[in-house]
Amino acid sequence: MTFSNYMTEWLYGENGYYATYKTIGKAGDFYTAVSTSKFFGGTIAKHIISLVDEGFLKADATICEIGAHHGYFTADVIEFIYTLRPELLQSFNFVIVERFDDLQAQQTKYLNESFGDAIKLTHVKSLSELHVDNAFFIANEIFDAFPCELFFKGKTARVEEDGNVEFDVDNEWVSEKAAKFYKDRGEIAVGYEAFAKEMAAAAETFEFMSFDYGEMKARPDFSLRVYDKHKVYPFFDEELNRKEAFAKTDITYDVTFEHVKDAYEEAGVAFIELKAQMTALVNMGILDLLAMLQKNVEEKIYKQELEKVKMLIMPDLLGERFKMIRFRKEA
Image (tube, rainbow, N blue to C red; front, side, top):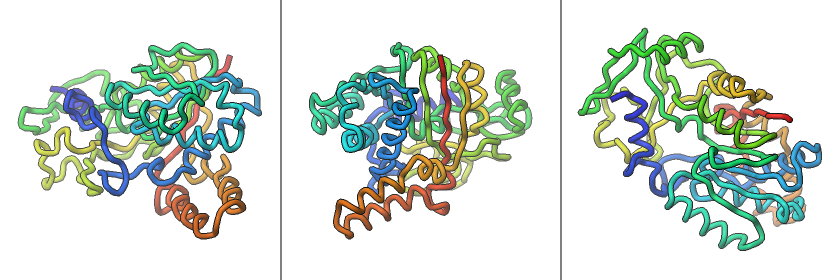
């Protein structure tokens, strides 16, 4: 089978890795910015409010998270909106895009327990079900979870039944993308173009912000890897038993943001910026939020939260490796 089909089954098949709820953080296979600090979602909330003040977002805008896992990120955004501009909770419409029914149920339960009827929350299984006037879309680590094809010196990979990978397929689309993004080997993501078009059709005007690891230009080699209980195994590592790892571990790769940018521009959505997570969060006011916290809590609590925020913004932790990419569709 093609590698993209193999990866789709690994992550999203009936028994795939993401088909059921997975613990993220110390007890899981990996950390995310959301599992690190509430101030990640808090900073996005502050940015959303700034878009309302700017006039780009309306008071009745749709705030939509794509792939919410447990629902913590949306909850953090809501909590900080309540703190900073509570009246917006009465007018905003919150939407979560989640394909799996059991994850929808988990998110609904958590958000209902947290906020009850104080918010308006709906679920859709894909962006194609959404048609709104004005929106803010947010996603954390979504583009690295798209299936990909593997490319090596003109040939595309196929996967045999035993998990062995052979580069012996001619695929014109993959070869064209590889040439466009100057890769002679590596991962070519599948689905960015369709995703961008779906989002462009889902709202008349919107801003979209996403955080992921990668670079604007493609890496000169394979980055495909498996995470298992915070251990990282390169996909082609001899130590990795692919058959045993299949659907039981997370499989991911570095994002080529140039490909994301190209997909959105093809869909008629304007690229705004790509920044290191550290720079993006500081620019959006994460340090201002910490200063507010310091004035209102004991020093011990402030220092605990400060240490968590450092993980988000320090260059040697998540601050430099992760990037924020931002797009806008204007009227």
